[in-house]
Image 1: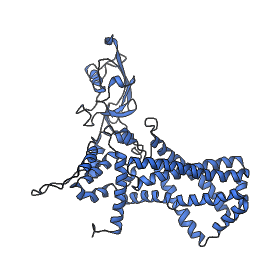
Image 2: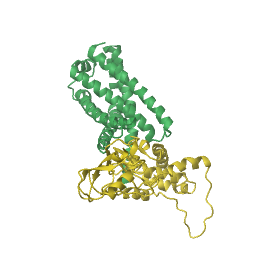
Image 3: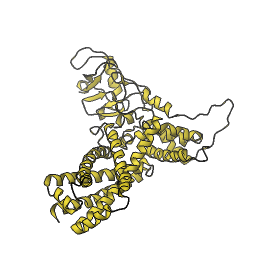
Image 4: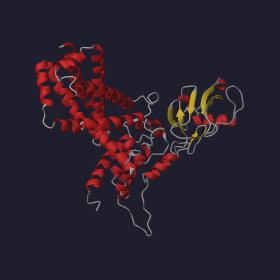
Length: 254
Length: 206
């Protein structure tokens, strides 16, 4: 009975970054407990489309296969999410797979998320702790703060929040919610806090924090449940205070 | 330094929408509401506003310049968004799109409204009194044009007030943002009533 069952997939494909995309339909044999990746692996094993014509295997990106690396994000039935945790039994058929539109396509479903990593560099998304000598242990962090900061640290730079954001598109340079929330994460760390003002300055422009239009899709779409909009609102407060300090002067600036 | 300019522009856009434009809107609707007490009451209130000292300074710095900046920068903001309601039909995403649509409608409405009233009065083509508005609003097309325009304006202000509270970091927690959503709905209903009630008075005399 189950041997005759098939899964229908319609995949948006693209052979080269500069070429236009096209759709290809696949019928693959059903197995129990499949996820989208094991279905794609089945196509790779036997690259024949629904018309029975041999084709090139569909290309996609993947890493951890347990929703912590963010590499396998794609648009599945209209929703951006990780293909490793997208279970075939829970998806409506035909399953439509598309690459995320916010990023340039490398090939088929694999996109280039470089802009997200560039944003992390822009916002100084790290804590500078290296010195020429042992700086000793850092200040301690209150447990209550550690708990919410841990939630922010779950970000895997998967790109789903950028895909969901109406203000991240070809007409704007908005860096998106992910990198902004990382500013809040590193500013919450007792050692990272020493560079708080420096980090806030990096997002005080139209491409940074001001690119947000409060549509709040990001917080709904985030697979890790990160409170992205709370981070953005908190940064709105921090940068407002920072503007006053830097314009009118304070004891932090001579 | 283009980055800093972008930051200041956006902050200014958010601030001006509430102070002074939002405050002016409420004042304007309130003064107009005198119409419900009859033409004499409206004329008295309107003439009081008209005879305020250094009126041109007030008009320029409280109304025209902030409004121009908010409108021009707002059009830029509206057209850098790309709607994705089909895949993300969440309440806030709808509000995001409505905010941009009502912004454009409000701009068209206010441009026409200023032309027909303040500029016409300034050039002496019309006189500021109850009959001016009665003449405009007894035409069914303009009555509905004003209904759409006024509701669009009150929506844009109420929802914009919600965004203002987020943009300045006043409502940070999801709970405070939710309560502000309810507050903004109440504000929307209240000032829409004030505006629409006045329009009905001018159009139908009731």
